[in-house]
Image 1 (cartoon, helix red, strand yellow):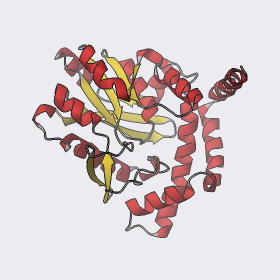
Image 2: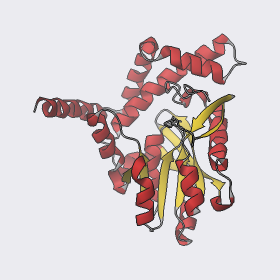
Image 3: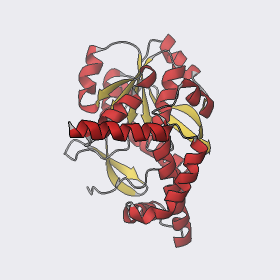
Image 4: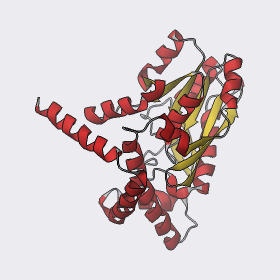
Length: 285
């Protein structure tokens, strides 16, 4: 009973925060970025230093500082999803080539979208779902916190998006043969075992989630990269790029490698807007 009351109170607070103008929330994010030492500063500093070994200490510190502004902006942009309606996303995200999805719809082909933790990956699913005719399937990993897991399910499932937990996606795809869009965050740390694929990410060998690679090759679903670029705070461009048109002819790991290389290139273009606080390089081969 107490937990339910606490959760309801916390949700009410978050909802009220979501009603605040995003420009004001960005100012608060700027203020909070001055307290970067309170959250995983060592991991962030180490990740950026290892990713850009030729950069000077001054350049590294600039990226670190700008990252924390991005981090808190992302935090408030996620909270903003609680009260955001369709017009909010249509105003703030320019989806440059939805006709690519229309093409696959006409061909009755399901597609896989591969995303990284770059810019606002949460918002991208909403604008794609709003402007496409296919059912959008969001593959997600459970949060350890029951409250935040339920909250993110609620936020992500707005506007017709269907959520499928990552451990259930294979069974779901075998049972559902409809033409759909499958969104996968593909730069997370996988559970380590002997079957995982390893690749180079910023000159460091890392394990990668191979689910998208396996599904694409098995089902021969074309794979697209979601290229999201920040125009200014709270405004983005989104463009889909074909990573692999015919996955069935590829070898295991090829698609995962293509995704990681494309994501790395994107991060180099916008180094401040990647989730450097995630300990992506903790596993050693």
